[in-house]
Image (cartoon, rainbow, N blue to C red; front, side, top):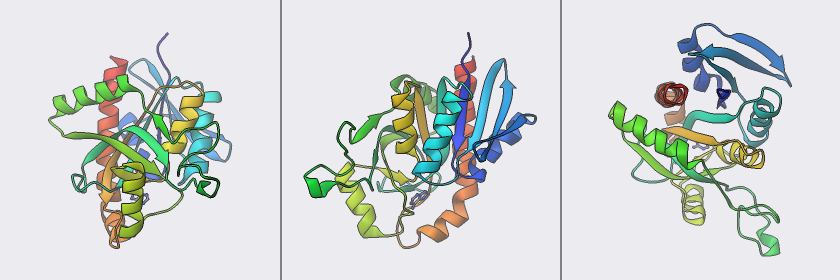
Length: 232
Ligand code: ADE
């Protein structure tokens, strides 16, 4: 049996290029959101944007798996760079993800940790390997790194540097780690790809507004190439 694949983003701009590429799809309203289903070269896809943040993205990921039956999940979107090696438009794939705003350090626990959880969730290595093959076929540079997630648009050098040093993180965004927690718990292999839209500094909101669409497209095109490979 071929896999049913979920493709998700957080914002409309992050999935628009994917829906455009598919051309025709069915729209299903469920749990206060819209889900789009399509058959793509013989494989069933379910596509959605969750809305911004950890709660909405966890809800959408869980719905795609539990209600729509997705057996793999690919996330496409934009991120703020922490690493100096990442510039606007560059692609980063998460090797592991952490929640930078999860904090019970008052009880002596590390940042990002709660009892019976773990600071990091590891992404699927097979899909990362596939991504490296796609990158070399496309002649694109793909960086691997740690992604830190929190319910906060970071536009502050100090906060960004704290996240970078506390979690050894290369990029930050607002959904990856929550999607990772859901997929890990439900044993669904997942892949989190981001194209850089800003540097999470004082100019971040302007840079984000300027580059959201082009960076989201960059990420979406890569994810569709991944789907092509998986479907093959
Ligand atoms: N996604 C893209 N840029 C971001 C930022 N600076 N903070 C949080 N999420 C982001």
